[in-house]
Length: 114
Image 1 (tube, one colour):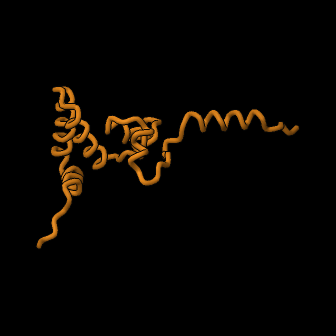
Image 2 (image 1 turned 120 degrees about the vertical axis):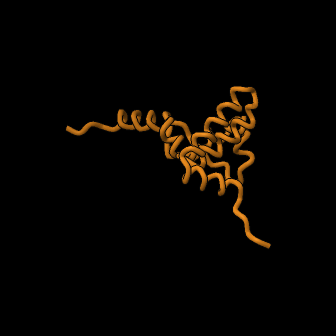
Image 3 (image 1 turned 120 degrees about the horizontal axis):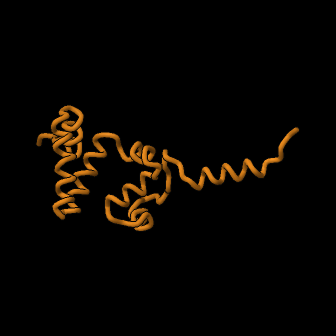
């Protein structure tokens, strides 16, 4: 039996190799959502994101954790999404507003040296 590539691998290779295919895929996802087929649109856009920037970079660019984006693309809350994962760990290359606030408050508590 011949080995075949997975559909996701096939889509990703086409997106990387053919700019017109990538644009058509993006347009198809948007058109599906605008016509009311939100689930299909999300699936197509998820494939497009995976094949282009990836969820981690998208999260970093938008200041949102990649897991929040994954959950939103599936129409779930973060808590619902994490229940489907083996390890419900929240990580992100984007960081969080809370982390910045914690850093700022720690700096304020630090004694000043003359």
